[in-house]
Image 1 (cartoon, rainbow, N blue to C red):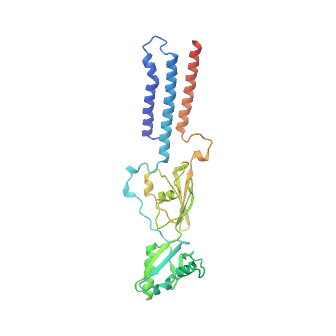
Image 2 (cartoon, rainbow, N blue to C red; image 1 turned 30 degrees about the horizontal axis):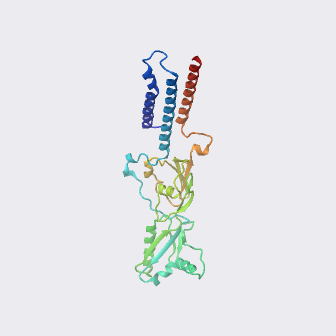
Image 3 (cartoon, one colour; image 1 turned 90 degrees about the horizontal axis):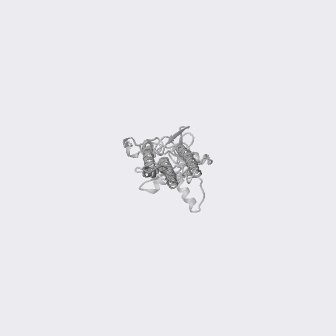
Length: 307
């Protein structure tokens, strides 16, 4: 509970004190007993109303602080926002490579995979090869040009490399090369509405976009414990991030890499359904309220017996 929240609860409490003790102030000038049975009942009623109002207010504010994204965005230094990530080709990636030129016949030999696939769609055969697979050593086997080392290159860098090799071979003077990553996908697991793996169109996706594609977090998902599991050069790294903090925008996992796995941890209410409340402060309020209600009831009983 931050200081602004505490101050707000305190202000509500002050108003409640005025409401509770108003009947006493109005009747204090009377001769004892200056509080009638009706006045006592009014005080108890006011007390219960104020107690539960403060309790509800504290609970609502606490819940809001748990679920709202990028709460400090207004004070965030926008100069340190993460730079867009250029996707780099990795082992086991599948590449779609298309070569074109002014004379289509010259570029046809470089597009054998695409040609075979087109024939298969027209009923002239089948081919399971849907692109160029990057092998365990980082190479692809490209028609005419042979093996090309592609691991670590961006899409643009590979396009330039293939274009340079075609020109130097003397077959085509003006080739245009287009490279696309076919298997760029991320997985979102845990407390989201639609968990699973999803294909990414284009070359770039942010953590917030991936969560949006997964249907957003459920009410049971912890916004402060979202993990991104990333594999780089055979090593796995685990990053923890807090969706409530604007510094997420400067995080190394704001822009996702291919095959990243996002995991959203469940909160205590989901993992321990026996607990009634998510907020320790609420438990304190309930305990105090219960005690004071018991005292008030006992006082009324004693007054009734003394009449």
